[in-house]
Amino acid sequence: MSKLTFRERLRTGAPILADGAMGTMLHHESHARADACFDAMNADDPNVVLLIHKAYIAAGAEVIETNTFGANSFKLASVGREPHVELYNRRGVELARLAIAESGRDDVYIAGSVGPLGVGIYPYGRLTQAEAEGAFAEQLFALVSGGVDLIVFETFSEHRELLLAIKVLRDLQPDLPVIAQATFYQENLSYGGYPPARVANDLHKAGADVIGVNCGSGPAGIAEILRQMRFAVPDALFSAMPNAGFPEVVGGRILFPATAEYFADCATTFVNIGATVIGGCCGTAPEHIAAMRAALDQPSTDFVDLHIGDIDIEQESHEPHAPTELSERLERGQFTVTVEMAPLRSYRTDTLLQEARRLRAAGADLINVADTPAARMKMSAWAVAHLLQSQLGIETVLHFPTRGRNMLRVQGDLLASHALGLRNLFVVMGDPTRIGDFPDASDVNDVAPSRLIGVIKQGMNKGVDMAGHSIGMPSSFTVGCALNMSAEDLDREIRILRNKIQAGADFALGQATFEPERILRFHRRYEETSGQAFDLPVLMAVMPLHSHRQARFLDNEVPGISIPDDIMRRIAAAADPRETGMLIAHELLDQMSGLIQGAYIIPGGDYDLAAEVVAYIKATHIEASAT
Image (cartoon, rainbow, N blue to C red; front, side, top):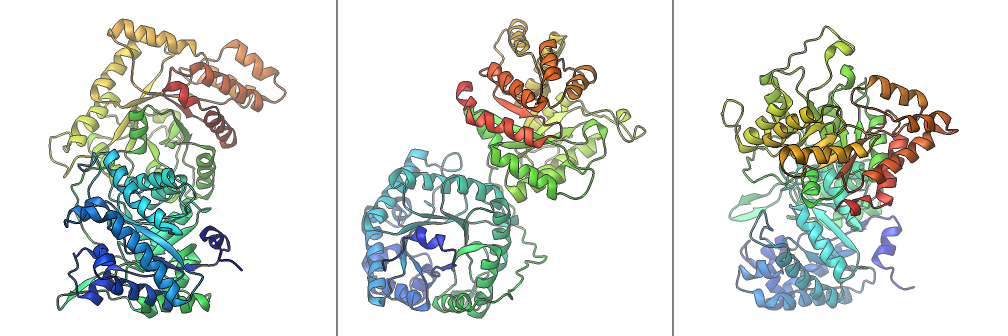
């Protein structure tokens, strides 16, 4: 019987055990310095590399990684060995193959190990994207040509570099299996400030066969990150390769405290969480892998509850924050689809998360989270936005009304939002309390939306509050404003809008319109009064109609919305108002194509309908017509 391919082995569903640390073992076995060029040992001291591979195979590993983690041109150049990229990578594959042959096993796979380049990519470093792609392509070509069974990208703390590496491999060899592993640090965030859920989503979309986490922390921390990834992308396959705890320096040697017995328990834990591929990273040795092998061969329902507890490691970072996905989409001119979700009048979030997961599956790029719409008591919009981002990995736009907040509260809330990773804001006045559940509630309003946009963009994003005091380091908010392109008094609307643009607004959420010709009228009037073309990105609200009653309510009771008689008659006469409302939404989007930069779907409580509209937008490639 021939050996299964690695993808066929994955499809069996049985856990796959990888090897443990290579660098740690080389450091101990060869007595080399911890910062030595271990990749060079493939040519300079191949026997020690071969013996380590054979030890892991004997311990029960089914996947062994080539000793090529740092064998790229930039890392090798730092130690004067840049010309040897091809040599070290090809020799790494040959040694792994020789170890398998000498071990007599026919069920072991060779994984080409690829790590980060070690030099930042612009704008966080000096490398251009083309230079980074060239370095990855050079190393990957040598590994692929050498005959690896799969590629393991590992220890990438900047997940956009990892996405770039995956793209380079797919361009070079589209069919080779990929394990893509990120590394997280303080507060379980990547170097760029992204949570595990967002990273997992991006890696899954990039086509990685297995997504996961390695290094950074011991089994407890890895288990928590794995849980978050699995919750965000439940259909993916996962890997987990922790360090053997936090390292200590004893007698000049770097030691790791986690025992082999502890790792045996952890192997079962990772499988219970949902990992298919497990192994070890820094500090692990063949005895750790052997203990994990024994645990996997004798599965038990008992497993260790890996809980981090109340560990508080303060590591202040002054690195700039990575741009939000929304900011990047606006910069690239990509058509962006968001859907509004209103928090529930409850502390239960399971239904809301389920609806959001469906919207994301339909193709929504972001979720807008409304804050006390219609002045109705709801769960905190911050909590909902944070849950969506941390548990589902979908980015949000947090509605941030100025009403009900004095200047102290506004600024404190902004700091809290940023700390929670909520960096896309829609600044708006908010609905007056007199129309809602508690008409006698305070309706304080110290700052107008245009002023608050300035506070954020010209103050906090430069590192100071309204009083000019430092906030430690600059924030990185992307800020949207409200816009009614169908306003009867266009000159007034344009004056207010220009104040918002001058304050620094990055985009606008447009009031829903059922008359696309009004958008053209707005563009013409803006150019007449301003002397320049209107170029602020607008995500236009789309309200799919689902009944004649709803249409009448919008037309008669919602300020700024007017529904033409022909649309009203179509809905009234429709045998299936929902289907007709969907068709009208499609027609409006087609007519607005080229005039707007995105769609902001307001479901009116019908998330099924919203998902269908989102799917239509994605299927018709409307973004192509907007670029």
